[in-house]
Length: 329
Image (cartoon, rainbow, N blue to C red; front, side, top):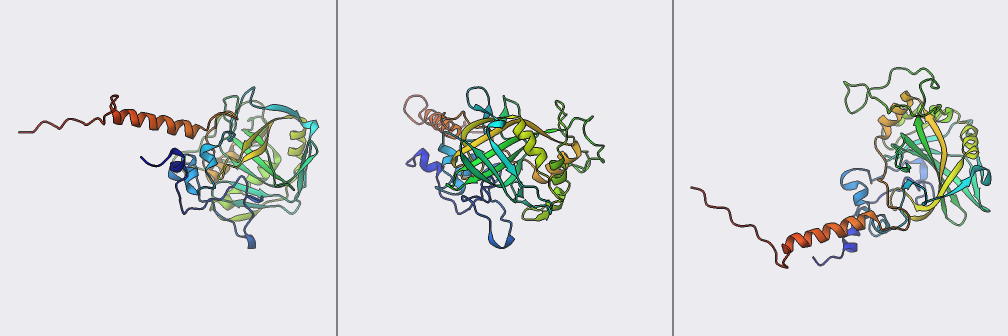
């Protein structure tokens, strides 16, 4: 066993990944000519979060070694609170609609101007995309979805506003058509999570997800209907933000990301949730350790290595050998 644990994590691979959380920023500029690049990483199996570090070495090494990784469980003590009134947030409406892309790992709206100013530092809005279920936990509880609005400063710093999305209360939701059948079983109707709280459907999300089925194939793009951003901006500014320094939640998991997790809740109707789920699927990284604590993958690897050594040594420093089976007659 000559390889170190770090070398095992950073084993070379020819596969190149695309960071959907940083798509459109300096970390992952958009392709020229309007081509939609499809991500090569994923959320299950050998391309999932447990193996992101090996998908592009050494660029993704921090996914397995970083100590300020995201997402996290938003519990007391890991964040500070910033009131919405203490930030400046503007997002341009898009009367002509916006490009809505399927990156293979998420669906993303390319924005047309917007800024976030915090403590005299200004970030420009690049895009917003969706995770299902939510990546951050709200005091141990996951939500139906999460929207990430990704900003970049002139100094190439990243800020993200994360907003939970719930299933709209039946009384507040508009009457919906019969839900589209789930891809899991064409013979069963998809059943969304039950509504919790008095969440109302957010017009912006309903408008966006009205065309999500048009980009069911990764690499495709569609123009949305006109988007009015003021509804969401007003909701965010009327609430507070839980802020902490974390990372991208996709490869290369770069740290130093300024996270602003909103205390607001947006909502989608059950029908819109099912439409989005049938295109997005599952795209959430597992919750990471609290900021500053050791990386969970390092802890797991050290524990597995210790267990393997103990098993090989048989507890006495010698390699245990199973007895030969008795001969059969």
